[in-house]
Image 1 (tube, helix red, strand yellow):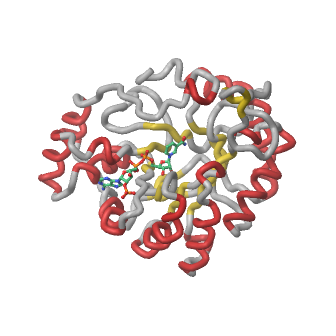
Image 2: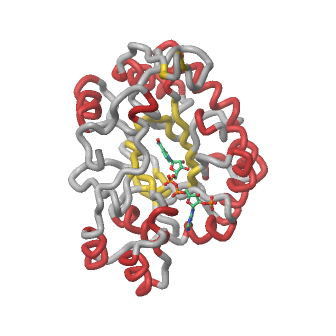
Length: 287
Ligand SMILES: NC(=O)c1ccc[n+]([C@@H]2O[C@H](COP(=O)([O-])OP(=O)(O)OC[C@H]3O[C@@H](n4cnc5c(N)ncnc54)[C@H](OP(=O)(O)O)[C@@H]3O)[C@@H](O)[C@H]2O)c1
């Protein structure tokens, strides 16, 4: 049985989710393949431009909606409270769905309102003065519409998360952030993570640990997250990898977890700070 974790809403989230960032053109086939081999959790976002492809693949699969867990994310140009519900509706239209299982604030930064995904002036992002607390309160209201089953955040710092917990009433069901054996962030509690498979493929400790389980370094990377009770989001457009990543759904023993603990490099690969017009992750590791 595939591993699932219980969210604070009571819903189950499959431990292995299928990532859909990058290679937009390949995503309809990739998601179709993923659903065929058994993935039931798909991660997309408005800005990935893959919602339509995900929607088509879901339709093609014929899998009943209730068997799927679909996540999408609010982009930075739609943080104004009045824009949140229409932004969700655009995503639902492209996904051809009535609801998503999880809706996340993608980044804690607000950009100019409108339909431009990357609104710039003189090469810099045009920021908008909108408080993330107000955006999140608009997300909370979506829960009453039935169009989102759970809400959460992504790429928040510790301070941003603490403020949210203090000033709003719905505890985020998920905090999606970069985390892997080279950026372990011990002591931080969160629910969802990303794996960085292509970077960790040559890490000898992961390959060594994998031998006992007959698993590869990428599979061990995924299992490392699953063992800690977090869902992981491998992305691939390659059928053999789509299939093998799903077999990262297993648990590592405590000794192997201990070995992996020592390979932490506090190395963050994805920090859009300069480019996005704000400094992110200021109180987190890998800065
Ligand atoms: N919330 C956020 O801000 C945010 C940011 C980044 C990512 N994400 C989510 O997390 C997902 C995963 O992101 P990630 O950065 O961790 O990427 P990833 O899953 O590590 O995958 C990216 C690359 O790894 C390759 N790959 C996949 N499986 C492999 C394997 N078994 N062996 C070797 N290479 C492999 C893929 O190649 P091929 O496709 O060519 O096979 C692709 O080039 C994204 O798709 C997205 O859904 C969210």
